[in-house]
Image 1: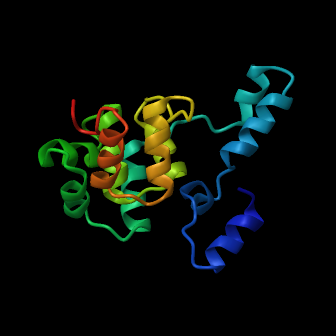
Image 2 (image 1 turned 60 degrees about the vertical axis):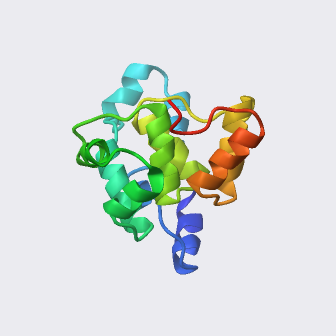
Length: 162
């Protein structure tokens, strides 16, 4: 998303991205710099490469979605103690738990993909049958319960099933 797009989105009442909030270069811009650099070493000399913290991103999502941790935990079905540790950054969730939290927060696909990356898990992939169902549910703002109904109806393992 370019700066003009982000400004238009904010002025229209939409949430801005945490990268836009800090004034740091967007990931897309950094990728362009990397690909046009003469070598990785030259790129690394001037580019910010530290990773974002999952706990920090979750706190930003709570604020952006006007949610409380307790509400997210209830809606996600994640064990409360474990979920609070994830929000504090002391525990790292598995892929299933990350997806459950995304539904609990009400994330869209882009926010969910970022959560998965920050939790060191693979992104949702539309060529994977189960992931395709989850993607569809995220983009259509389904609840976790509704997503699990779709997964079950289509013969796939539900989220939180283990």
